[in-house]
Structure formats: structure tokens, C-alpha cells
Length: 200
Image (cartoon, rainbow, N blue to C red; front, side, top):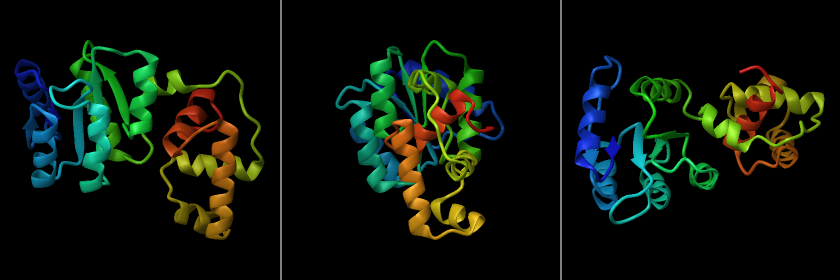
């Protein structure tokens, strides 16, 4: 789904994305209210969303749509690629943050990456912006778990693969978040990849 209050931008993006055989634009919206209605009706897997809309901020719209479509992924498009917006977009639940001056190829590549692994994909732009200056020290077990998180494993899958209890796994993950100064899995993955702590 495309959400942008500029018709020309929506039309251009739609034509470009439809030219990719594996991408289908199933609906468009020009405002937050239209986006909420379209999301509930068409249930898109990936939503491309402008930060500034006529009736609501795209950052405020993400959690509202998530209540209806918790599994959908969000790509933020903006004319304002400042670090403040990067952090706010990630905290809101965006999987990628791209500037409108970027290429169509970059957007298509981002969509494909998110489609393959929607739980952990973070655009390089976000990863660079969030990286701390020093590499945190993790235990061997924490590094094993972090590597699995980067690969998209769920908490349950990590428990089964490492033969540890669910509670122990959650404790390790919380320790990883604390050491990486991450609020959630997406931030932890972004930091790990940026610092080269685990293989992508």
C-alpha cells in the first residue's frame, strides 16, 4: 500500500513498483484516515508511508495500523532524513527509512528484503544512524542468541535451537538489549550488523 498526500508522487511510485514482476500495489491512500480504512480492507503486507500527511503524522499512523495489522511492515519515505526522524521512525515500528530523493531500485530492493525477512530487516541508513561508538561485550551464549535473532529466529525458535528454556532465552535477550542499549529486536539487530558483531 502507498500512503502519500501528493498524487503525483503516488502515481510515480505506483507505476515504478508495478513494473517489478514480484511487487503488486494493491491500494493507495492520500491521508491517514484513508490509510486506516484501506489497511483494514486490503490488508497489505508492506506499507510505504510518508512521514508528513495532511491529517496525521506517518509516525503516529504506524501504531494505529499495527493494531489492525500487527504483521505488516512499514517503509518510511521522507524529505527530511534527519537523525531525529530516524529514531522516531524506528521507535514507531518502521522497518526502513528512505529519502524521497533515493532511487526506485533502492525502494524495490528494500521491499524485497522486508518481504523475505520482515522481522529483522533494517535499512543500512537506519543501522548507521543507530550504531553506538563502542562495541559492547557479550558472552558467548549471548552472541549465539544475537546471531539467531539477526537470522530472524523467534524467541521460541532460539530456545529450541540452543536447548534452553523460554524464560532463560528471554533473560539472555533482555541482557543483550541492555548491553546494546536497544529498546527492541530491530535496534539490537541494527547495532549488531553495524558493528560487525555477527554475520548478516
